[in-house]
Image 1 (cartoon, helix red, strand yellow):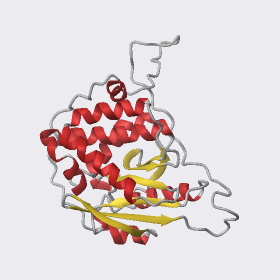
Image 2: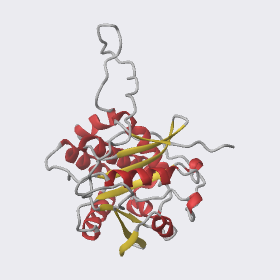
Image 3: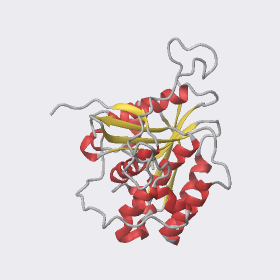
Length: 285
């Protein structure tokens, strides 16, 4: 069966739900997510997906890179990056985050906060972009989608003024040689519970033809997808067409302090923990 070459694009808010599902599938059996959401029980997949959806909303609201790999029009991979501008205080994003954490239970909320604090302690001190999550659907791994997403993240960093490079963390030893192939080096090592955590950094690479300081000749972000046609609603325009509702239902529920309703029990899927490039989601939660 021929492999489809993916197109790397900047995703918009209309893709938040689908991107959250892709990442939840990619990380379903990942060691760190299993540890962080250990107390979720039957709601594991639902809460994991909601967490990734909020991560996607952060990118939309703050203008951080929110990248997707499309193969024949299907979203098969997603990368979430922290930009140089940090999250402002007292915003709707913080209200949504607090609402979601409250719905997860004390153990999960505590572990997520501890993970965030750990990343803050071990990140490089230089200004940099941070690859928080990158995952590819199980049926599309080994097709090069993750590599194309990584290269686009590197391109964005190399053409962003004041960014020294890209940092990430991984919890699988099999990921280390893969990231080293792309120019990353291990900068620190720690653990969460019994899960090992490696922090890595890739300094921006000077490419042939680059001139002056980093950021000269800045290139645009990947093309944004055209907005999807809104679902029909009771609100219609003059021509009888449905008006676009800018905020997703997921976002509106969080802003009102109500966690998203569960979407049924998690699907049972016989997923084997990745051990190589071909079976690896290239996972960075």
